Image (cartoon, rainbow, N blue to C red; front, side, top):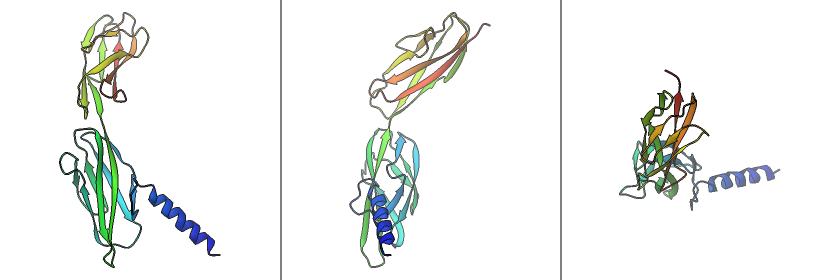
Length: 192
């Protein structure tokens, strides 16, 4: 009869142990391994797995350039820095007996991109200039491509020339510094 509580206890410990490689998994953190774009924010919630005395205390481990926290307690908003990378939040609390609890939450800040304008309407053969905006990467260089066969052409500086055939086409800007960072825009080519 004592077997189910032991299994439940082991499952709870295993689940808590998956939260960011913490040495003392005293908190269930959601999301356990947050991923956020550079300059954006994410809400992180921590639930103590044991009784604690007072509020939960958070801090950014990297004091210069590691982002910042808005609010405190079990629910915080982390504002990512403008530079992609790995950062850490330290969560602390005390148990009623005075034992200090500490857990580190790893936050992955990734680069992001957008294209301006995100959509354009052009006549066949007309041209338009597009600008890629990168955030969080050390370089602003992008590689432009047209995603659709026969969808026109785009130069290295973002000047798009529409094909002679009407349709909807897509262009893609890929960050040279991190090819996983991309942005897409669509172009509708129609007769005037």
